[in-house]
Length: 121
Image (tube, rainbow, N blue to C red):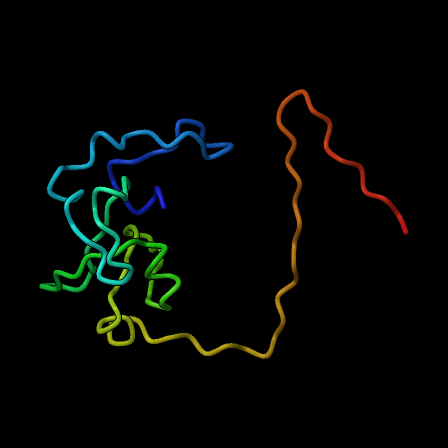
């Protein structure tokens, strides 16, 4: 995810493409291996992030951490991501409420292309 790596940004923030700044990621970070997927760094251009917990040196991909159920969140002070050992200690998992959330579907058409019409059944 682009927002988790400070050197990266989207060229177009409306459509979130293209990703720019890959060449700005320090070589030392590109050499780190994800502790979850173990993908060799040379085959993974985006690099890893380090656990937010003080003195923790575990490196992982944001998507791998999400899939593993580790704590990955955006806060007012910036993104935070914790390894398995620090996920529950730093941020206890929120209890699910019985209230159901409404699903929202939004269609955004590129400029000059009309949005699809909704068909009534």
